[in-house]
Picture 1 (cartoon, rainbow, N blue to C red):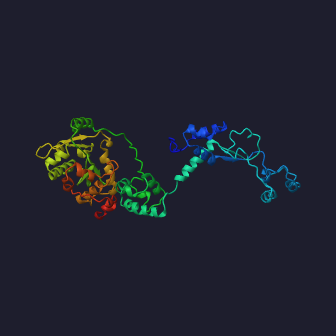
Picture 2 (cartoon, helix red, strand yellow; picture 1 turned 60 degrees about the vertical axis):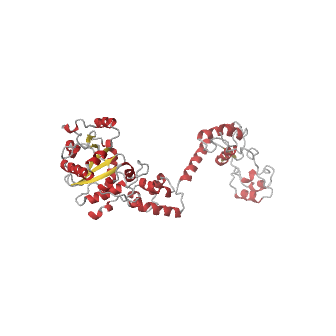
Picture 3 (tube, one colour; picture 1 turned 180 degrees about the vertical axis):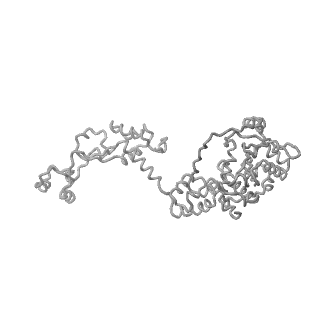
Length: 444
């Protein structure tokens, strides 16, 4: 019968329990209650049995032997308690032993409690009866249900052997700097718990790796407020017909053109080496170019070198539109858009001032760079080969935003296969991905 009732598998709610309590007071049968709630009668019976409470009369405490059917006619209790001048307290040890050893002891059982629903709700004699009672109330029943639900889901639902096996899989990968999104994308079939449960296990310190080893688990420091309000750039000739609104209109008019996001990542000093990053939006594939300094000339030379390496035809196909911010190193769009001979190769647009989320994908990729090169570390000892290695590991990291795939996986489908080779990158196996400073420590 329970299989045929729709919704019988769902838990009872507080309103359901209130309805059960009200109907018991009206002396309704369990079958009638179950038919209204859409449950099996056995479900209602179990609910009442599990969550009913035994209650003694608050003003009338009686010894155990007084529960015997022969209590009023029995002469033994009078002989035992005849020397006691106090009212019967119910704590007399002799009385308790008498009830245990008396061969005539026959406890009284209420006829209402002996049959369904086994509670005193709705009994006409409940206010005058001095026997032990059982009641079903909705609020205590709901509280007991919630405590049982919470306790059943707490703790670690794994054997020590299973937990050790999971630790052997998770901890080495986390210690290599791999985010959990990448680990789940590669080993999702081998992990028997969800990601939320895995974070709870990290909070309980059951793994060799700890919360401090998770890149995003440690909160960033609060940003300091600027003492003075930001001032807008007065000279904005470079932004003429290159604003973000112009970018939206241009891409709407030419939706087939790909978009490349461009930015720089600085080291410990603004005058030292820095990184030029370019991200192809269609596959989130990132190219990292090491610059000698963060100047317009270095950026232009890097773009010219990339164009010469790839060829003007391939560059125009995969870099037709470049979206960047308003940094001083990008304020010469005319030289970026054309080759040294004057051939048009791309179109440059600028985000709105202080709105970095307009190129959010590249900003997100910069977090992976900071896992390996923390903010404030000098880039003096790094070479372009180091940046190619770093880009290879970042582009081999699986992403939730790419439905568990890595940028390298999509790049093999969406862009020319020569681009990774021409930029010095190679695909790294998922378990070998490392996003820790140790990746480039040999160069420090």
